[in-house]
Image (cartoon, rainbow, N blue to C red; front, side, top):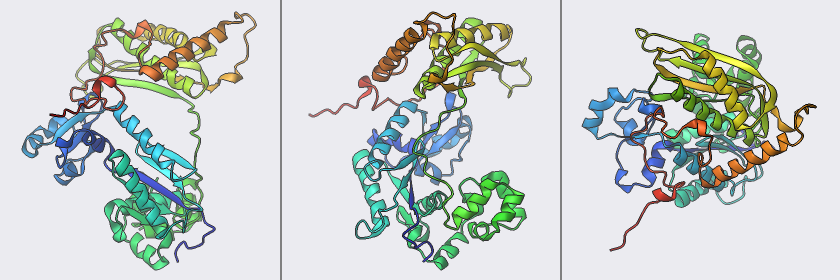
Length: 437
Protein backbone atom coordinates (compact mmCIF):
# COMPACT_ATOMS: atom_id res chain seq x y z
CA UNK A 1 0.00 0.00 0.00
CA UNK A 2 1.14 3.55 -0.65
CA UNK A 3 0.64 4.92 2.86
CA UNK A 4 -0.63 1.87 4.65
CA UNK A 5 1.12 2.11 8.01
CA UNK A 6 -1.45 2.65 10.76
CA UNK A 7 1.16 4.41 12.90
CA UNK A 8 1.13 7.37 10.52
CA UNK A 9 -0.90 10.49 11.26
CA UNK A 10 -3.96 11.09 9.12
CA UNK A 11 -5.19 14.52 8.06
CA UNK A 12 -8.35 15.58 6.27
CA UNK A 13 -8.90 18.87 4.48
CA UNK A 14 -12.54 19.92 4.32
CA UNK A 15 -13.18 22.66 1.74
CA UNK A 16 -16.52 24.36 1.03
CA UNK A 17 -17.40 24.35 -2.67
CA UNK A 18 -17.68 27.82 -4.24
CA UNK A 19 -18.15 29.14 -0.71
CA UNK A 20 -19.09 32.80 -1.25
CA UNK A 21 -21.43 32.01 -4.13
CA UNK A 22 -22.95 29.08 -2.22
CA UNK A 23 -23.70 31.33 0.76
CA UNK A 24 -25.51 33.75 -1.54
CA UNK A 25 -27.64 30.94 -2.95
CA UNK A 26 -28.40 29.43 0.42
CA UNK A 27 -31.23 31.75 1.44
CA UNK A 28 -32.66 32.49 -2.01
CA UNK A 29 -34.08 29.38 -3.73
CA UNK A 30 -34.75 31.38 -6.91
CA UNK A 31 -31.00 31.41 -7.54
CA UNK A 32 -30.79 27.62 -7.99
CA UNK A 33 -29.08 26.76 -11.27
CA UNK A 34 -28.23 30.38 -12.07
CA UNK A 35 -24.70 31.74 -12.63
CA UNK A 36 -23.64 33.77 -9.59
CA UNK A 37 -20.53 35.89 -9.07
CA UNK A 38 -19.34 37.74 -5.97
CA UNK A 39 -17.45 40.99 -6.42
CA UNK A 40 -14.49 42.50 -4.57
CA UNK A 41 -14.50 45.74 -2.59
CA UNK A 42 -16.26 48.60 -4.39
CA UNK A 43 -17.88 46.00 -6.66
CA UNK A 44 -14.71 45.85 -8.72
CA UNK A 45 -13.63 42.36 -9.76
CA UNK A 46 -14.95 38.81 -9.60
CA UNK A 47 -13.60 37.06 -6.51
CA UNK A 48 -15.95 34.05 -6.43
CA UNK A 49 -18.03 32.12 -8.97
CA UNK A 50 -20.73 29.52 -8.78
CA UNK A 51 -20.30 26.31 -10.76
CA UNK A 52 -22.71 27.70 -13.38
CA UNK A 53 -20.62 30.88 -13.77
CA UNK A 54 -17.46 28.82 -14.19
CA UNK A 55 -19.18 26.68 -16.83
CA UNK A 56 -19.93 29.68 -19.05
CA UNK A 57 -16.33 30.89 -18.83
CA UNK A 58 -16.42 33.74 -16.29
CA UNK A 59 -12.73 34.24 -15.37
CA UNK A 60 -11.59 34.80 -11.80
CA UNK A 61 -10.45 38.36 -11.19
CA UNK A 62 -12.23 39.80 -14.23
CA UNK A 63 -13.41 43.42 -13.79
CA UNK A 64 -17.19 43.44 -13.50
CA UNK A 65 -17.60 46.32 -15.93
CA UNK A 66 -16.02 44.17 -18.63
CA UNK A 67 -18.57 41.40 -18.07
CA UNK A 68 -21.72 43.46 -18.58
CA UNK A 69 -22.41 42.11 -22.07
CA UNK A 70 -21.79 38.50 -21.04
CA UNK A 71 -23.92 39.03 -17.93
CA UNK A 72 -26.85 40.27 -20.00
CA UNK A 73 -26.52 37.36 -22.42
CA UNK A 74 -26.11 34.60 -19.84
CA UNK A 75 -28.17 36.04 -16.98
CA UNK A 76 -25.24 36.35 -14.58
CA UNK A 77 -26.24 37.71 -11.17
CA UNK A 78 -23.61 39.70 -9.25
CA UNK A 79 -23.43 40.29 -5.50
CA UNK A 80 -21.25 42.56 -3.40
CA UNK A 81 -19.08 40.76 -0.85
CA UNK A 82 -21.19 40.06 2.23
CA UNK A 83 -18.43 39.50 4.78
CA UNK A 84 -20.80 39.21 7.76
CA UNK A 85 -22.71 36.37 6.10
CA UNK A 86 -19.61 34.48 4.96
CA UNK A 87 -17.88 34.74 8.35
CA UNK A 88 -20.96 33.52 10.21
CA UNK A 89 -21.48 30.55 7.87
CA UNK A 90 -17.78 29.71 8.17
CA UNK A 91 -18.08 29.64 11.96
CA UNK A 92 -21.06 27.30 11.67
CA UNK A 93 -19.11 24.92 9.41
CA UNK A 94 -16.24 24.83 11.90
CA UNK A 95 -18.68 24.11 14.72
CA UNK A 96 -20.04 21.09 12.84
CA UNK A 97 -16.53 19.86 12.00
CA UNK A 98 -15.68 19.97 15.69
CA UNK A 99 -18.15 17.13 16.19
CA UNK A 100 -15.99 14.84 14.05
CA UNK A 101 -12.57 15.39 15.63
CA UNK A 102 -11.00 16.73 18.79
CA UNK A 103 -8.26 18.54 16.83
CA UNK A 104 -8.75 20.88 13.89
CA UNK A 105 -7.07 23.89 12.30
CA UNK A 106 -9.10 26.62 10.63
CA UNK A 107 -6.88 27.28 7.64
CA UNK A 108 -9.06 29.85 5.86
CA UNK A 109 -12.66 31.05 5.80
CA UNK A 110 -13.70 27.99 3.74
CA UNK A 111 -11.02 25.39 4.59
CA UNK A 112 -10.16 23.42 7.73
CA UNK A 113 -7.65 20.67 8.46
CA UNK A 114 -8.84 17.84 10.71
CA UNK A 115 -6.66 15.36 12.58
CA UNK A 116 -8.22 11.95 11.93
CA UNK A 117 -5.42 9.89 13.48
CA UNK A 118 -7.04 7.02 15.31
CA UNK A 119 -10.28 7.24 13.32
CA UNK A 120 -9.13 4.70 10.71
CA UNK A 121 -11.44 1.69 10.78
CA UNK A 122 -13.84 3.56 13.02
CA UNK A 123 -16.77 2.32 10.96
CA UNK A 124 -17.42 0.16 7.94
CA UNK A 125 -15.92 1.84 4.91
CA UNK A 126 -13.11 3.46 6.90
CA UNK A 127 -12.08 7.07 6.50
CA UNK A 128 -13.83 7.52 3.16
CA UNK A 129 -17.16 6.69 4.82
CA UNK A 130 -16.29 9.09 7.64
CA UNK A 131 -15.62 11.79 5.04
CA UNK A 132 -18.99 11.12 3.40
CA UNK A 133 -20.68 11.47 6.78
CA UNK A 134 -18.98 14.86 7.23
CA UNK A 135 -20.31 15.93 3.84
CA UNK A 136 -23.84 14.76 4.63
CA UNK A 137 -23.90 16.45 8.03
CA UNK A 138 -22.80 19.83 6.68
CA UNK A 139 -25.23 19.59 3.77
CA UNK A 140 -28.16 18.55 5.96
CA UNK A 141 -27.50 21.02 8.76
CA UNK A 142 -26.17 24.03 6.84
CA UNK A 143 -27.13 23.48 3.20
CA UNK A 144 -23.54 23.77 1.98
CA UNK A 145 -21.54 21.32 -0.15
CA UNK A 146 -18.00 20.37 0.85
CA UNK A 147 -15.27 18.09 -0.46
CA UNK A 148 -12.96 16.06 1.75
CA UNK A 149 -9.35 15.10 1.02
CA UNK A 150 -7.58 12.57 3.25
CA UNK A 151 -3.86 11.81 3.47
CA UNK A 152 -0.98 11.12 5.88
CA UNK A 153 0.30 14.72 5.55
CA UNK A 154 -1.33 18.11 5.23
CA UNK A 155 0.13 18.56 1.73
CA UNK A 156 -1.32 15.23 0.60
CA UNK A 157 -4.67 15.99 2.23
CA UNK A 158 -4.78 19.27 0.30
CA UNK A 159 -3.94 17.41 -2.92
CA UNK A 160 -6.55 14.74 -2.16
CA UNK A 161 -9.11 17.51 -1.76
CA UNK A 162 -8.19 18.75 -5.25
CA UNK A 163 -8.83 15.24 -6.57
CA UNK A 164 -12.15 15.09 -4.73
CA UNK A 165 -13.23 18.39 -6.31
CA UNK A 166 -12.15 17.39 -9.81
CA UNK A 167 -13.58 13.87 -9.42
CA UNK A 168 -10.18 12.30 -10.15
CA UNK A 169 -9.47 8.65 -9.35
CA UNK A 170 -13.17 7.93 -9.02
CA UNK A 171 -13.58 10.30 -6.08
CA UNK A 172 -17.14 11.27 -5.24
CA UNK A 173 -16.61 14.28 -3.04
CA UNK A 174 -14.15 12.33 -0.88
CA UNK A 175 -10.65 11.17 -1.86
CA UNK A 176 -8.61 9.01 0.52
CA UNK A 177 -4.94 8.56 -0.41
CA UNK A 178 -4.31 6.25 2.56
CA UNK A 179 -6.05 3.30 0.86
CA UNK A 180 -4.38 3.68 -2.54
CA UNK A 181 -1.45 1.55 -3.66
CA UNK A 182 1.87 3.03 -4.67
CA UNK A 183 1.18 2.28 -8.32
CA UNK A 184 -2.22 3.96 -8.14
CA UNK A 185 -0.74 7.04 -6.48
CA UNK A 186 2.11 7.31 -9.00
CA UNK A 187 -0.29 7.03 -11.94
CA UNK A 188 -2.61 9.64 -10.43
CA UNK A 189 0.17 12.09 -9.52
CA UNK A 190 1.64 11.82 -13.03
CA UNK A 191 -1.60 13.33 -14.37
CA UNK A 192 -1.65 16.34 -12.03
CA UNK A 193 0.41 19.48 -12.88
CA UNK A 194 2.99 20.45 -10.28
CA UNK A 195 1.28 23.85 -9.93
CA UNK A 196 -1.54 22.12 -8.02
CA UNK A 197 0.75 21.28 -5.11
CA UNK A 198 -0.02 23.38 -2.04
CA UNK A 199 2.54 26.14 -1.57
CA UNK A 200 4.48 25.68 -4.82
CA UNK A 201 3.33 28.98 -6.30
CA UNK A 202 3.67 30.54 -9.72
CA UNK A 203 7.37 31.44 -9.55
CA UNK A 204 8.46 28.06 -8.25
CA UNK A 205 6.30 26.35 -10.88
CA UNK A 206 8.18 28.13 -13.66
CA UNK A 207 11.56 27.22 -12.17
CA UNK A 208 10.52 23.61 -11.59
CA UNK A 209 9.32 23.31 -15.17
CA UNK A 210 12.75 24.51 -16.34
CA UNK A 211 14.13 21.48 -14.46
CA UNK A 212 11.59 19.24 -16.25
CA UNK A 213 9.62 18.79 -13.05
CA UNK A 214 6.16 19.10 -14.60
CA UNK A 215 3.88 16.90 -12.50
CA UNK A 216 3.25 16.07 -8.87
CA UNK A 217 4.96 12.73 -9.42
CA UNK A 218 8.03 14.48 -10.82
CA UNK A 219 8.30 16.63 -7.69
CA UNK A 220 7.64 13.67 -5.44
CA UNK A 221 10.49 11.78 -7.10
CA UNK A 222 12.92 14.70 -6.92
CA UNK A 223 15.91 14.64 -4.56
CA UNK A 224 14.90 16.60 -1.43
CA UNK A 225 18.44 17.88 -0.84
CA UNK A 226 18.65 19.20 -4.41
CA UNK A 227 15.30 20.93 -4.02
CA UNK A 228 16.49 22.52 -0.78
CA UNK A 229 19.71 23.74 -2.36
CA UNK A 230 18.00 25.23 -5.41
CA UNK A 231 14.83 26.51 -3.74
CA UNK A 232 14.30 26.46 0.02
CA UNK A 233 13.78 24.27 3.04
CA UNK A 234 10.05 24.94 2.66
CA UNK A 235 9.91 23.26 -0.74
CA UNK A 236 12.09 20.43 0.56
CA UNK A 237 9.47 19.80 3.22
CA UNK A 238 6.83 19.77 0.50
CA UNK A 239 8.71 16.98 -1.30
CA UNK A 240 8.96 14.97 1.91
CA UNK A 241 5.26 15.54 2.63
CA UNK A 242 4.40 14.27 -0.86
CA UNK A 243 6.33 11.12 0.03
CA UNK A 244 4.23 10.64 3.16
CA UNK A 245 6.49 12.11 5.85
CA UNK A 246 4.53 14.59 7.94
CA UNK A 247 6.52 17.83 8.38
CA UNK A 248 3.66 20.24 9.07
CA UNK A 249 1.80 19.89 12.34
CA UNK A 250 -1.78 20.93 12.94
CA UNK A 251 -1.95 24.51 14.23
CA UNK A 252 -4.88 24.40 16.62
CA UNK A 253 -3.99 27.77 18.16
CA UNK A 254 -3.83 30.72 15.77
CA UNK A 255 -0.53 32.53 16.44
CA UNK A 256 -0.79 36.17 17.42
CA UNK A 257 -0.24 38.56 14.54
CA UNK A 258 2.92 40.62 14.51
CA UNK A 259 1.20 43.45 12.65
CA UNK A 260 -2.43 44.43 12.24
CA UNK A 261 -3.56 46.44 9.22
CA UNK A 262 -6.93 47.90 8.35
CA UNK A 263 -7.50 49.67 5.05
CA UNK A 264 -10.05 50.05 2.28
CA UNK A 265 -10.41 51.79 -1.05
CA UNK A 266 -13.04 54.51 -0.87
CA UNK A 267 -16.38 54.20 -2.62
CA UNK A 268 -15.76 57.69 -4.05
CA UNK A 269 -12.73 59.94 -4.11
CA UNK A 270 -12.07 61.87 -0.91
CA UNK A 271 -10.63 65.38 -1.13
CA UNK A 272 -11.08 66.94 2.29
CA UNK A 273 -9.30 66.26 5.59
CA UNK A 274 -12.47 65.79 7.73
CA UNK A 275 -13.63 62.86 5.60
CA UNK A 276 -10.15 61.32 5.65
CA UNK A 277 -10.18 61.63 9.44
CA UNK A 278 -13.47 59.72 9.60
CA UNK A 279 -12.04 56.93 7.47
CA UNK A 280 -8.78 56.66 9.42
CA UNK A 281 -10.64 56.69 12.75
CA UNK A 282 -12.97 53.96 11.48
CA UNK A 283 -10.07 51.78 10.33
CA UNK A 284 -8.25 52.29 13.61
CA UNK A 285 -11.36 51.27 15.54
CA UNK A 286 -11.40 47.94 13.68
CA UNK A 287 -7.64 47.42 14.08
CA UNK A 288 -7.78 48.12 17.81
CA UNK A 289 -10.62 45.63 18.21
CA UNK A 290 -8.50 42.93 16.54
CA UNK A 291 -5.55 43.94 18.72
CA UNK A 292 -7.53 43.42 21.93
CA UNK A 293 -8.96 40.15 20.63
CA UNK A 294 -5.47 38.65 20.66
CA UNK A 295 -4.69 40.26 24.06
CA UNK A 296 -1.94 42.46 22.67
CA UNK A 297 -0.87 46.08 22.77
CA UNK A 298 0.78 48.13 20.05
CA UNK A 299 3.99 50.09 20.35
CA UNK A 300 3.81 51.93 17.04
CA UNK A 301 1.18 53.35 14.69
CA UNK A 302 1.37 53.88 10.93
CA UNK A 303 -1.05 55.83 8.74
CA UNK A 304 -0.95 55.97 4.95
CA UNK A 305 -2.96 57.79 2.29
CA UNK A 306 -2.70 57.57 -1.48
CA UNK A 307 -4.30 58.65 -4.72
CA UNK A 308 -5.22 56.24 -7.53
CA UNK A 309 -1.99 54.86 -9.09
CA UNK A 310 -3.97 53.51 -12.04
CA UNK A 311 -4.76 57.04 -13.18
CA UNK A 312 -1.24 58.37 -13.84
CA UNK A 313 -2.56 61.45 -15.64
CA UNK A 314 -4.12 62.65 -12.39
CA UNK A 315 -1.97 64.37 -9.69
CA UNK A 316 -0.34 61.66 -7.57
CA UNK A 317 0.50 61.65 -3.89
CA UNK A 318 1.41 58.81 -1.54
CA UNK A 319 2.64 59.15 2.00
CA UNK A 320 3.03 56.81 4.96
CA UNK A 321 4.43 57.68 8.39
CA UNK A 322 5.07 55.47 11.42
CA UNK A 323 5.58 56.81 14.93
CA UNK A 324 6.46 54.97 18.16
CA UNK A 325 4.02 55.45 21.03
CA UNK A 326 5.16 56.80 24.39
CA UNK A 327 3.47 53.77 25.98
CA UNK A 328 2.11 50.64 24.29
CA UNK A 329 -1.68 50.68 24.16
CA UNK A 330 -4.77 48.84 22.99
CA UNK A 331 -7.14 51.69 23.77
CA UNK A 332 -9.08 52.75 20.68
CA UNK A 333 -9.15 56.35 21.91
CA UNK A 334 -5.38 56.55 22.35
CA UNK A 335 -4.57 54.84 19.07
CA UNK A 336 -7.07 56.98 17.16
CA UNK A 337 -5.65 60.17 18.64
CA UNK A 338 -2.16 59.31 17.40
CA UNK A 339 -3.44 58.17 14.01
CA UNK A 340 -5.27 61.45 13.44
CA UNK A 341 -2.17 63.39 14.48
CA UNK A 342 -0.16 61.55 11.80
CA UNK A 343 -2.89 62.07 9.21
CA UNK A 344 -2.98 65.81 9.86
CA UNK A 345 0.76 66.03 9.26
CA UNK A 346 0.80 64.01 6.00
CA UNK A 347 -2.39 65.34 4.42
CA UNK A 348 -1.96 67.61 1.41
CA UNK A 349 -4.92 69.46 -0.17
CA UNK A 350 -5.58 69.38 -3.88
CA UNK A 351 -5.51 65.59 -4.36
CA UNK A 352 -8.23 63.02 -4.98
CA UNK A 353 -7.50 60.33 -2.39
CA UNK A 354 -8.52 56.81 -3.30
CA UNK A 355 -7.34 54.81 -0.27
CA UNK A 356 -6.22 55.18 3.32
CA UNK A 357 -5.18 52.74 6.01
CA UNK A 358 -3.60 52.17 9.40
CA UNK A 359 -1.15 49.61 10.72
CA UNK A 360 -0.34 48.65 14.29
CA UNK A 361 3.14 47.26 14.85
CA UNK A 362 5.61 46.39 17.63
CA UNK A 363 2.91 44.19 19.10
CA UNK A 364 3.43 42.44 22.41
CA UNK A 365 1.29 40.66 25.03
CA UNK A 366 -0.58 43.18 27.13
CA UNK A 367 0.69 41.68 30.39
CA UNK A 368 4.29 42.34 29.39
CA UNK A 369 3.97 46.13 29.53
CA UNK A 370 6.44 47.78 31.85
CA UNK A 371 4.71 50.13 34.28
CA UNK A 372 5.12 53.91 34.09
CA UNK A 373 6.18 55.47 37.37
CA UNK A 374 4.63 58.82 36.45
CA UNK A 375 1.27 57.59 35.11
CA UNK A 376 -1.88 57.59 37.21
CA UNK A 377 -2.21 54.21 38.88
CA UNK A 378 -5.76 53.57 37.73
CA UNK A 379 -5.36 54.74 34.11
CA UNK A 380 -4.63 51.31 32.64
CA UNK A 381 -7.36 49.57 34.67
CA UNK A 382 -9.99 52.13 33.65
CA UNK A 383 -8.93 51.94 29.99
CA UNK A 384 -9.13 48.14 29.95
CA UNK A 385 -12.51 48.16 31.66
CA UNK A 386 -13.95 50.66 29.17
CA UNK A 387 -12.60 48.77 26.15
CA UNK A 388 -13.94 45.49 27.58
CA UNK A 389 -17.44 46.95 27.89
CA UNK A 390 -17.28 48.37 24.37
CA UNK A 391 -16.11 45.05 22.89
CA UNK A 392 -18.81 43.12 24.76
CA UNK A 393 -21.55 45.42 23.50
CA UNK A 394 -20.25 45.29 19.92
CA UNK A 395 -19.95 41.51 20.08
CA UNK A 396 -23.52 41.14 21.27
CA UNK A 397 -25.23 43.82 19.19
CA UNK A 398 -22.95 44.03 16.15
CA UNK A 399 -19.72 45.82 15.24
CA UNK A 400 -20.10 49.58 15.34
CA UNK A 401 -22.90 49.67 17.92
CA UNK A 402 -20.48 51.64 20.08
CA UNK A 403 -17.77 53.56 18.25
CA UNK A 404 -15.73 56.75 18.58
CA UNK A 405 -17.47 59.90 17.39
CA UNK A 406 -14.43 60.54 15.20
CA UNK A 407 -15.56 57.76 12.84
CA UNK A 408 -18.43 59.98 11.69
CA UNK A 409 -22.10 59.35 11.06
CA UNK A 410 -22.51 59.84 7.31
CA UNK A 411 -19.39 58.03 6.06
CA UNK A 412 -19.93 58.81 2.38
CA UNK A 413 -16.42 57.50 1.74
CA UNK A 414 -17.49 53.91 2.57
CA UNK A 415 -16.76 51.35 -0.15
CA UNK A 416 -19.48 50.70 -2.70
CA UNK A 417 -21.61 47.63 -2.11
CA UNK A 418 -24.57 48.36 -4.30
CA UNK A 419 -25.49 44.70 -4.78
CA UNK A 420 -25.24 43.57 -1.17
CA UNK A 421 -27.47 40.72 -0.06
CA UNK A 422 -29.12 40.77 3.39
CA UNK A 423 -27.19 39.72 6.48
CA UNK A 424 -29.49 36.70 6.79
CA UNK A 425 -27.88 35.20 9.90
CA UNK A 426 -26.54 38.18 11.87
CA UNK A 427 -29.20 40.89 11.62
CA UNK A 428 -32.68 40.46 13.14
CA UNK A 429 -34.12 42.86 10.59
CA UNK A 430 -32.78 40.73 7.73
CA UNK A 431 -34.16 37.38 8.84
CA UNK A 432 -35.98 35.50 6.07
CA UNK A 433 -39.75 35.69 6.41
CA UNK A 434 -42.02 32.77 5.54
CA UNK A 435 -45.65 33.46 4.78
CA UNK A 436 -48.39 30.82 5.13
CA UNK A 437 -51.57 31.42 3.16
